[in-house]
Length: 102
Image 1 (cartoon, rainbow, N blue to C red):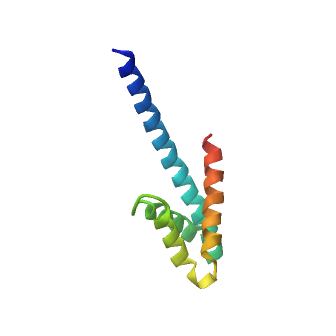
Image 2 (cartoon, rainbow, N blue to C red):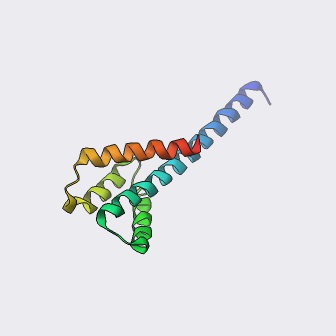
Image 3 (cartoon, rainbow, N blue to C red):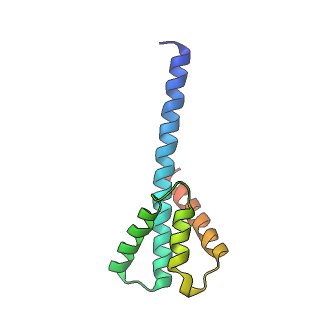
């Protein structure tokens, strides 16, 4: 195996690792976002668990965070939470989730 092949395999492994890490961080962030929103919505423990799963599943609708944002925004529409606050909370919880894996 040439050094080029070895280098390519190294890049492929790093890419796969980075993708897996990003998936885990996003899933953890979505869990935290679901917990945060469910408290605002006044859900009990059972309903909170269901809601968290729905937020996690929402992230599979499309690439990026907009699908989660839209879901949470729609769910919180009667609570007068500004878009900026939702995005800020998502960013904050993403950093929290990231710090747990690094």
